Length: 195
Ligand SMILES: [Zn+2]
Image (cartoon, rainbow, N blue to C red; front, side):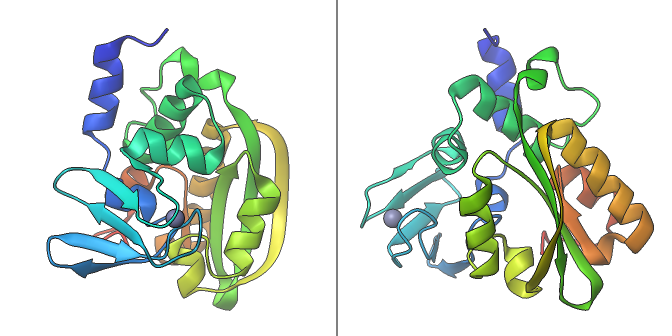
C-alpha cells in the first residue's frame, strides 16, 4: 500500500493541464480549456485547471489526474501513482520503491527536423497510432513523427527518464521531450511554458 499522505503529496505537485497536454491539444475557453477528447476523439473535452478535473460530454469520461492516467494508460491505481510521480511530479531521484513494479515499453520517436520524443506506455500500438495521427503529445503534433527509432520492452519508467536525459544531452532540450516533464523543464530550459 502507498501511504495516503504520500499520494497526496505527489498529486499536489502535478499540473493536470501538463499531463493532458501530452495526449491532446488544449485551448482556452473562458476559465476552462477545451480540445479533442483523447478517448473518443470528439470535440467535447473540457478541463478545469482551477478544479483540477476533466470531463468529456460525449463519452462521459471524467475525473482527476489519477482517473485520466489510469484510463489512458490502462494501469491499476498503484501503477498510476508511480506513473504520475515519475513523469510529472518533478521528483526524479526521490522515487520510493513502488515505482519498480511498473513496466512497459519505452520508445524513442524520431520527428521532423531532428527532433525526438521519448515515451513510456503500456499500450504501445494505440500510442503509436495516436502519435502518427497527430493525436499523441503536443510535441509530436508540432513535430511530426518520422519513425520509431527504438522500442525497449519490459522497462521501468526510470528508464524513460534515463533515456530522455541522454537524448537531451546529445541533441539539446530544444529538440527533445520525454520523461519527467517538470524536472527536465526546470533543469534544462529557461522558458516559462511547457511547450
Ligand atoms: Zn470523449
